[in-house]
Length: 416
Image (cartoon, rainbow, N blue to C red):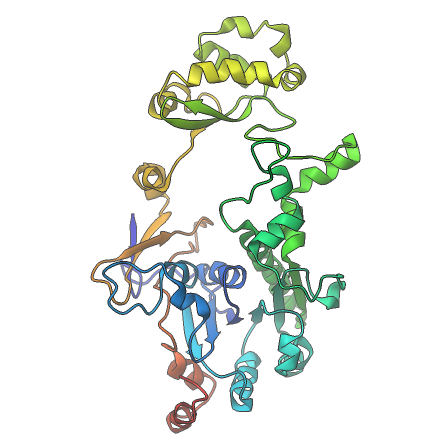
């Protein structure tokens, strides 16, 4: 388990690949903050602009029992690490003027308001582009921005379940054809967040070459559909309308989840080579020559028989026993809960569970680590999520505001 407090635990952390990139973060909830977190993890300077009362997820919890301050909960802590915070009033012209000044020295602006909100604030892409032609402006909205294609649903509000529903993932997830299910994590937010981060970096690379920024538009629904790409080709190539398949793959077998004595495991032994290996490990050489299972097409056509044979074997062993029997020999993995993840050495050696200090708590909390690994410029969790307005003075000082000016802004209730 790696450790990070206010700074890196063992001296200065190596510079991230995005060091020198300044991001103005006007996002909220999950999709936008996760996108900017990805940039911050790789070394970008992310300046989170919050309302004077703070972004709403600060107060949403969950809070640890020993948290005496409750400045922010686990939700905010997890996806706002490595960022700086400035609190200002966007409803005041002085507050909006400060955003314009910040954007003059920025490389990127990210927001996930509903379409038209930034225009009403006088902070549209076109306005900011006049201030800084090389600026990359990114938005994440439920159905995209009219600039790249006006959806009939442009003005609809959307959250994760809406994107999951309309993007197709719910329609192929569930125990049977009549029971669609929401996917556990907020993929309707997280997938567009990752795609927006990718789009931003593409646009930044081009801006560095040409001096010209551009608008990056990601629709949450579009992003989920791209994740479900196989339903598009299945409809085109097979004339099918895919429905929930339970815990099995519709085109590969065995390729899914089966019961163990104490839970569930996954097996992907769909190729002839892996199938033969699995049969021998199960002590079922007879299945290799069974015409119902002789090749990958037969195994798909006779999925029930295949899963019955595999499940009969796995159901007599614990997850740990199956890990020892099958792990490394065929594609195999036990279905983990977070307690098991926390105990598995893989996640420790990969720094995927990271300790950070938490204001108000005597001991550190843990959040998820950085999955993108680079040898020369490793991303990292360098510091905890910021307190509200923790960096206001520093950020305003960096754009030329004198101490007296900052004080007057605070006294007037423009910044905090």
